[in-house]
Length: 131
Ligand code: SF4
Ligand code: SF4
Image 1: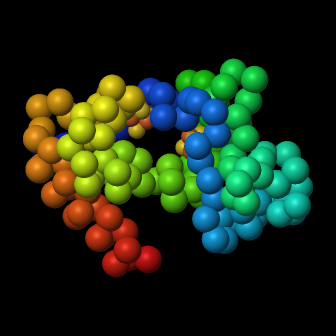
Image 2: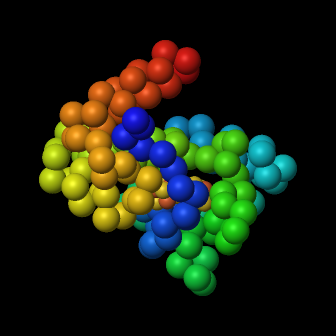
Image 3: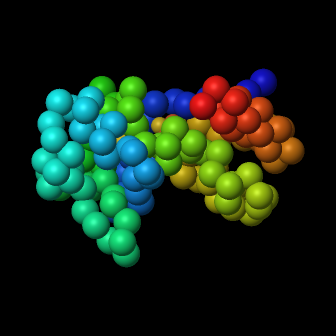
């Protein structure tokens, strides 16, 4: 039984700009969109607290979220998006994991916190091993 199985509901793409970009991500996404990095920053990002965040649209979804289709930059989406729901806060704290279940229907209610943590470790270690 998987502790997480994405239902593709898009709920995690909703909300005011929590997705910040890490080193090299703006260039990677700009290349994927076939635009310059400065164009990408002007059209799709906002700077807050010295960090670059993806902007949100008028519907309050991430600017790259398309209803019924999902993420328009899926192959190159930011590490923050790839990592969810295995954020360190969810993995390190049972109460935060409980709260995350309200935000993400893909977190299996039948699984224990320990199973979620085991799965998170296997997945995040696999990702770092494969680069
Ligand atoms: S909220 Fe959870 S189940 Fe829904 S798309 Fe995001 S990760 Fe998948
Ligand atoms: S980049 Fe894609 S996966 Fe990440 S919040 Fe935006 S639409 Fe969702």
